[in-house]
Length: 391
Ligand SMILES: Cc1ncc(COP(=O)(O)O)c(C=O)c1O
Image (cartoon, rainbow, N blue to C red; front, side):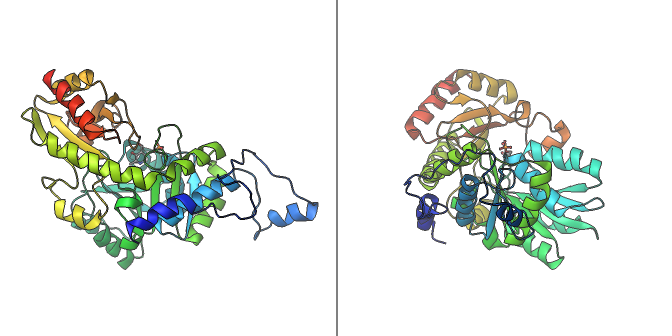
C-alpha cells in the first residue's frame, strides 16, 4: 500500500459509524452495556454472539482495533493493556506445554524475560538465534518448534531480521512467525506483506505518540484474533482501558505525520553523530554504516525509524556524563513520544537481561539509546552538541 494512504486510514478507519452524530469518535467509558431483553443477552453470550463487557469487547476498543488492522493491512486486531500484554497474549494463543520457540537475539527485555524465564515454567522453551543470521533460525529448528519470534529493528541494538526469508522458512515447516513491529511501525515496514502471521505492537510508543497511555495491539487473521480474544485475553485479562484505547486512537490520527518527522529527524541526528570526534560509533538502520544497511533499505521502505543508538568514546562513564548534561532531551526510558528521550539501556530498559546475553546480542555496556522526537532537529542537535562538551 502506498504510504500516502496511511494518512487517510489513520484518521478514518474505525470511525465510519454513520449512526453516531459525533464527529470525533466518542469515548465509551463503561464496563458493561445493557441488553433490551433476556433473550438478547443470551444471544450475545452464545457462541456466535458478541457480548459487550469491556474485558470481552468495547466499542471504543473496537475502533482502535479496526484502525490498527487497517494500518497494518491485516484482517483483524486485538487491543491489549500494554505491549507486554500483546506479546504474552499472542504467544499464549499459539503455544502449549512442550512447544519450542526460536526468538531473535536483541529482544526488548520484557519479551526476553517472558521467553527465557516465565514461559519455561509452563513447559515452553525458547532458543535464541542470532538476529542477523537467517541460517541460525534454520539451525535451531526442532520437531516441536511452533513459533519464530522476531523483533526488527531490535530494541535497542537496531539489529534487523531478514523478515521475508525467516517467514518463508517458517511456512515451509508449518510454523507461525511473530514480529514485534513497534520500532519500525507500519509506516516504515509491512510485515504481513513479507509473510509474517502475527504482528505485535507496544501502542504505548509511536501509535499513542504523546507519552500518556499504555497499550498494545495484535494484528493477524480473524481466526487467530478470535482465538486470542476468547482465550488468553479474556482469561488472563490483559484488556485495555477504553480511555487508553481512545487516547491511542486519537494519537494515531497524526501517526503518519509524526513518523515522517521522526524518520527525518533521526536520520539527521545519526548523520551528525557520525561526524563527531567524541562518538565511538553510531547505529541507525538508514545510515550507510549500519551493517545491514541494504536489508534496511529493502525492508524498511518508509524510513529508518525514530531511534538512534550510539556510544560515547570512554564508554559507560562518558555516556553517563552526556546524559547528565542534556537539557532539551529528557532522561528517561520509552520511545515514540513527540519529545526526544535519552537513556542508558544496560542500566535501565535492559537491566534485567544478564550481561553475557546483552553483550552477545550486541548491547554494549556504554550503549546510549536516543528516541528522537519531532522537535526542530537543529535544537536536538544543539542540545547534544552542548552535552558532548561536558563529556
Ligand atoms: C519493542 C518493544 N516491545 C514491547 C514493549 C513493551 O511495551 P509496553 O511497555 O507497552 O508493555 C516495549 C517497551 O519498551 C518495546 O520497546
